[in-house]
Image (cartoon, rainbow, N blue to C red):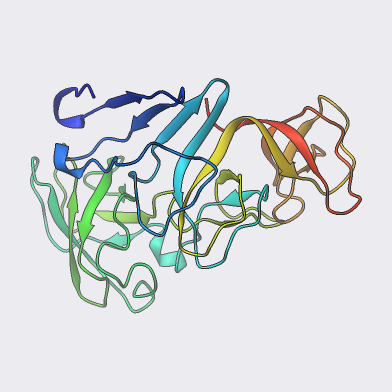
Length: 272
């Protein structure tokens, strides 16, 4: 592995022809990389950091934690929803924090004290961003935090503040997009995260495919070469119909048919 500064950018290549890009972490000991990657398998324990990127030829995957419901093979997935609208923005900051500080606090509420936020490190590898007043525009990856309740919650970021915060500063909290993913909905309520290559177990870890040829569940007949989208039928793709509420997923490589809940070969373009 080759590391660059405190970000520890790492590229790993193995005999199977896979290239692995590990996300930045705070210390070398935080890197989780044990067995060779297998996009056709799942595990009950976490083997790589969430969001780890895996490439083989033209195919791309991201390491993901399944949510509380098992995923179907070839079904389109999306990021987990916020536990409450309060999570998205305008969360009060507990105090003023100076430049160079990486441990801050925010004010929890009863609405935020829900799974997974109400467990220690339930938001780890997710993000905090600042949307109002001093510190506006900053975004940091979350390293750890105590369980969220209606009190002041200490939170540790991987990187230190570059702009100071005041008691007027407000923040939003977002899970890692590859944490606790769920089947995409007819009205997509989050970014599309990819497609599993196997039927998974709830709360297990798996690789979601985001780029290159993949067998994907289709809702209707789709012509060769047509742009396919999520956001019309839950957990399936449809031919592009409009720009409103639809998310481009890729292009159809084989005719999509609906008999027996068929899958079509889709060239995914969610990652590159």
